Image (tube, rainbow, N blue to C red):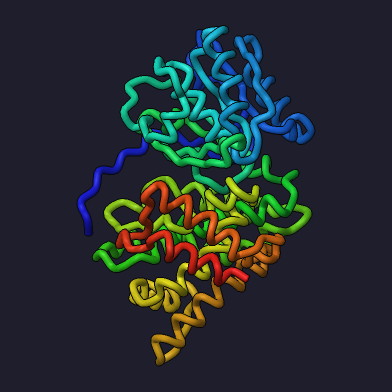
Length: 387
């Protein structure tokens, strides 16, 4: 097992009715900026619960944060924070709202001339100051409610960057599974796939003598597979949604990635598909991962076989056949949720996508994978398979 330094300061408040506890976790004299997305929290009752919990508190609002939050939108919130001297941020929504709020948290006190450089030039790690934030999660998927990561798009430049800072762990996150009850099933599907791929990026690499982390990863994968049919039910099943919500949080709160090699190539490629073609994040992952696993099957063989045996309970004598079957099982799981697994399903030409992303990665000098052996030309080869 590799050396690691694990610290996660986020308090989780989980369960029915926990939004009512919101006020006690925010400093009494704080000036709060409530951030949210397209307004669904106003139609599903979550907004009313939050406002009721924050009665007699000073609360400003900023709505309209997009899926794949946009830099130009977020800079409007940064100006509001600076003008009104906000000192606590409260993100109410899914991963996009939380990620966007994390950017606001670092950009508002930033003294540099170009906040975009916090992302594009990876300067976020060097910051010493950020505004504190809390979250009320309404869409399980990204794990942003319990990690220090964020991903921001800039549509005007067709770019999308991930960043992280130790300053960006939420102070607290409220997870009430009932907030998911009004979600469209497409968003539930996306969340299940997103969480599943998060685990795979940390698990299907190569053995590192990390027995506990492997078992934890397998438990999350098996849970997602087991509960996904009930999680997709209407009317919603509380226990399934609760397991879904907690599994998605644990998929990316850094615990299962402690001390093990991680990949993240599927994510890096997926970000470019979103930047160029507007695919939802989970959609971009599902059209890449099966082909990346196949392309790198020799280097990932030991973990693919373990994945086949421990998660899918496959029993096949031929290792090559085992690997082929488990990759097919992975794609079939995505398809069972109604998630396409090819670029062509979205009307995207794999050859065009391959060329555009290869050129971008070549210009940036990007090399991906747990072995740092996925070159731009390899990315192109993987994308050409997604047809």
